Image (cartoon, rainbow, N blue to C red):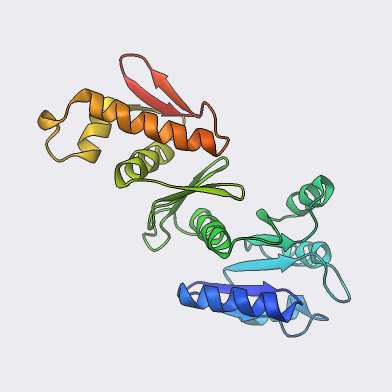
Length: 224
């Protein structure tokens, strides 16, 4: 079970996050001593930290730098600050991601899963989330996220996108896609695959992800 430390001084927000993460079978703990965040980190040894910026005594940037002196544990900043400077500072000081308040709890869970997957086990099937650049795909419920936007995918669209992400920047042949989608490719019209890919393209376009699926003439497709 993955352990997550919530460093958030708003009791309502921290409790809501904790309850959500517990439902996803994470062991979530809320910080209790904002004087000694580093000590609580050392005792709990979390796999991931959710770090607010505006905290009592010292801010999240301070604690992130202190934790980075002893650990590479993934840190996701959660903050109402929305300036470009804050986001840049969060990442340059060692943060792995940045989520603006107010945020979708479902999106937060997806970002947590994607971060855990990258950090610990790409093959861990309990983390059914894939990411490429700004695309985050939750395989479990066939939803794709880009920033705060999301779209629901059909089962075939989800399979196509997951194959693209697992082979990002590489050509995925039409034959390979057809075999992944249908058991007996001999019964599938080639146009059926084209229709599915085009529908996926339209949904990604609606999320602002224009041109990320490239057609390689005579071969297949490539996610760029």
